[in-house]
Length: 154
Image 1 (cartoon, rainbow, N blue to C red):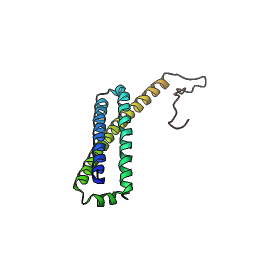
Image 2 (spheres, rainbow, N blue to C red):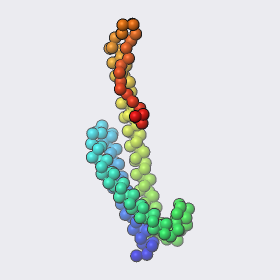
Image 3 (cartoon, helix red, strand yellow):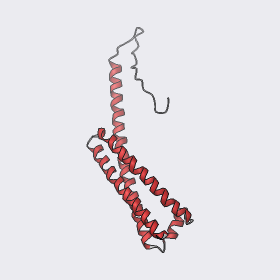
Image 4 (cartoon, rainbow, N blue to C red):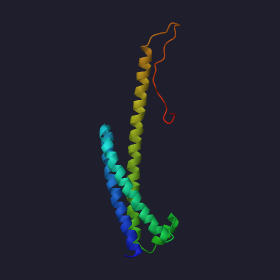
């Protein structure tokens, strides 16, 4: 197998894995839209497996490219210039990765939106709890004990 054929094979295998990831991200998006967050945990295991496979596949392709002295994007495009099959495989892989990134960013915005709603609801509940505590002996309104701690403050 020639180096070009090997590169094309790596790219196609990676693109197939990215397509599997896209399908999982689209499923994740449906769950987020329909409020079925409780089903995300099992989906995250599948995503982790695909991402691990992608990392291995990408490392193998990177190793091949490194052995050819192709270490950056500019050098890659120079190398691809006279190799139409390799160029097509690379472009297909880039397109698939861009699609996965776009879906992932949209899913992240859905998660952030839901998180903001939860934070807002917690604020309302804390205020309501504080309002029901009454006053202490000094006539001051008591503060609700929230037990809230910021992430990373432990």
